[in-house]
Length: 260
Image 1 (cartoon, rainbow, N blue to C red):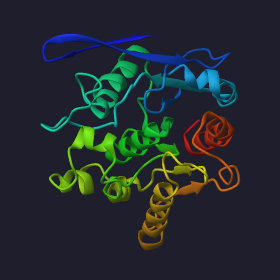
Image 2: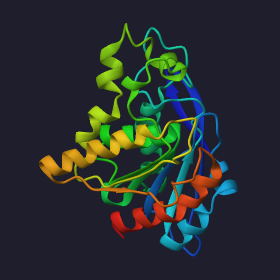
Image 3: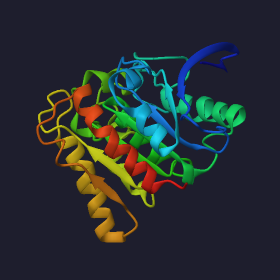
Image 4: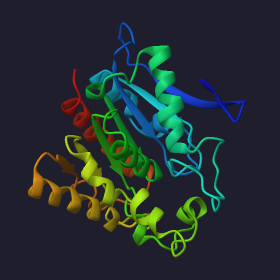
């Protein structure tokens, strides 16, 4: 489905794939999940590679899978930015193009209590980053195999391609886009995390650091809610087999944490 928007006085077109649960009378005010794929993946990969449609039917979720190409869900472009996935930065596209489109055209993603965000790999980074930055929009978030601590990835070519070299741009890396630092904004936003213990693409300590930070915040202040998968992640890597195996648990999590 096309999503037309204007940037710099020029019209552009994004794409989104939506799944409406079977036997659902109407989509207006339905529970909505924004579902983010990984780097260079496609929205259709979700239905082809996982049972997500089956569980959307069971729990009556509308799935919104935008085509996000190579974005890191940045909120702005910088003079050093080489990876410009589209005229609008990825984070801004979700919040200022896609969400208004869903609200105006379908009446979706209107209520925080009925809107969740879920991603894998780079999409997991996006899901947790957007949930933290926009905690008035998303009532729950889930990330599988994500990278969350940009400050520990100083040589990462993808992060450099958006935010510039670490040494010259420490504030960006350590504060603006570091989900470990932004985690305190996830108070009253239930979070589900999973990471394959054999992942060699995004290393498991990324999820461990976020898990430990959220646990620390809950112990110190209260109000933080976290579920971390251990069983299915124990022998998993960075692939659709793992992500497909986690879909039942993730959709069950959203069913429990979002309003009916």
